[in-house]
Length: 236
Image (cartoon, rainbow, N blue to C red; front, top):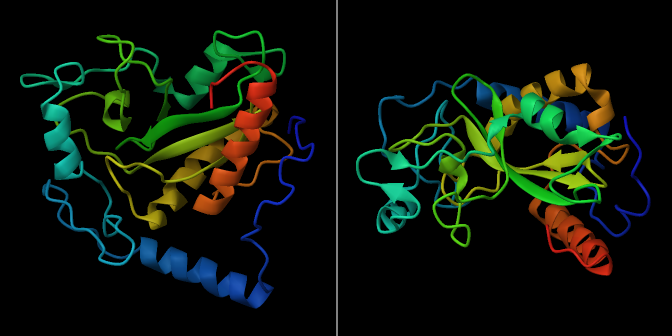
């Protein structure tokens, strides 16, 4: 893997410290949960967990109707005929990294390696689609997760953020307010990430931690923003 550990994880909670027995039980439980029958995939009516607020586990996720209704009121984001615009910066992650990876790091229209987070979706073909937050209709407006695919109500297998430090991947999560995917779907994301790691280990930081909990990601982003501020940047 690449370099970039530094003191990035100083003070970051470690959610992997539990006994090997507990770890084995947790992994088996996650595998068993992932094998549970999915809800009818033709249904575009999400069912939300009353405790976590995320959707109940299913093979594909459609948009939270509340978020969809809000976006339908914004012509810069949603067209009644065609739906969400297609983000022109979005590509399968191997292609995206290939376009912007140079000198051992990810660069995004900047002289310094990228540090921060980028939105991704795991599409119905198990491809990670990633892109910059860019709205081609109005550059000052939002570009939510569904714009990585485009369409009326594009289904995904998961969605969230992928985190970078010094231009290298350090982790990912399922933070998507538009889809609110169940955390169990991160297993599928992990498989896709592993394929990328096997073929391009140079794109991953020595500090790579896999799935990041919400507390971890918040602390990491604060650290990245502080580092960027010192450089006069705000790309996190």
